[in-house]
Each structure stands twice: as C-alpha cells, then as structure tokens.
Amino acid sequence: MEVLLYPDPRLRRPNAPVERFDAALAALARDMLEVMYRTKGVGLSAPQVGVNLRLLVLNRSGDPAQPDGERIFCNPRVLWRSREKEWGEEGCLSFPGIYARVERPVAVRAAVVDLRGEPQTVELRNWEARIFQHELDHLEGVLLADRLTPSDRVRLKAQLEELEGSRARTGA
Ligand code: CO
Image 1: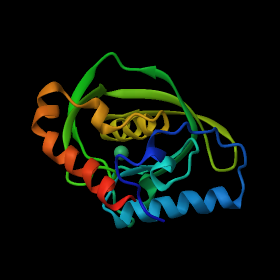
Image 2: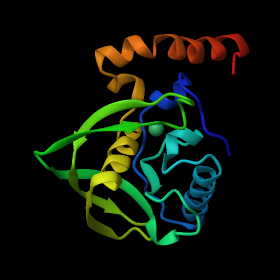
Image 3: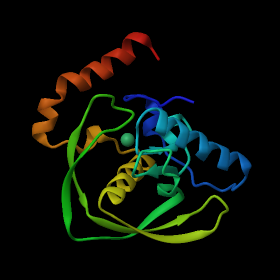
Image 4: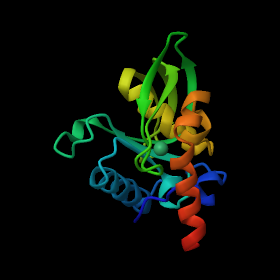
C-alpha cells in the first residue's frame, strides 16, 4: 500500500459511503494506520491509498506506541463546528515537503460509524479536530493545495509545479 501523491486524479474522485463492515474493512483501516506511521503522518484518508471510500484514520500522537490515540471513522458527517477558528500549520502525505497555514474551527462534533457499523457521535478539539477536518477534506476531494492562502500560493508555486511536473514526466 502506497500513498498517492498530488496531482493523482484518484485524490479527486467521489468517495462512496462504507456499506460493508467486514474483516476486509478492518484490515484496510489497519493497513492505513501502518502506512501512516511508516510515513510519519498523523492522519490518512482512504482515497490517499487509492480506495475511494469514506474512511479515515488518525492518531494525534503519530506514535504507534500510543494506540489509544487511534481513531477510525467511517462515513463521517460534521454536525457542528465551533465559531472560534484557529490558524495552524498542516502538511499532507500526498504533498511531501509542503507545509501551509490553514484556518479551521477549533472544535467539531461529528456523526461517524465505527468498524462494526455502530453509529457514534464524537467531539474533537484542537490538534485532533484539525487532523480530522484535513482528512474529511480528502473525502470531499479537497486538497491542501485548495486551502492555500494567496501568499502561500505564491510561496509554494514552484514546489507545487514540481509535484505536478514529476507526475507528468513519469506518467505515474
Ligand atoms: Co492530506
């Protein structure tokens, strides 16, 4: 399993709701967590590994030795966003080497479904809420490149063009 890099078109495809809560789904989520840890990430969405499903995983510690931070959410739907927002720096495993400041609500409440198909309501704050909202963007086909401020768009132009160009050259 590998992480797809921008501008792979699979990152923009519609993502279908998870409907089968079976062993294959649990294995996919586990594989995604392993890839996330291996690549030093704190969150990963299914479309980033070429699976166009509404599934995301995160661990705010990014540390496999702290599995209590692991969250696996299917079919997430935001119910409430805090009015308070905060700027914070984000990276993305699909944009290696690129970091940008993004403004997001500080807290969110969401309806999610767990691996057994059980609906849950979760409330996330701060860093965990930021990771969740970043991964939720992926499920909507929204990428870090779409969230750049005008000044970051200028600052990161060459790096983004290099990513776009490297794909065109290899045809990957
Ligand atoms: Co990302």
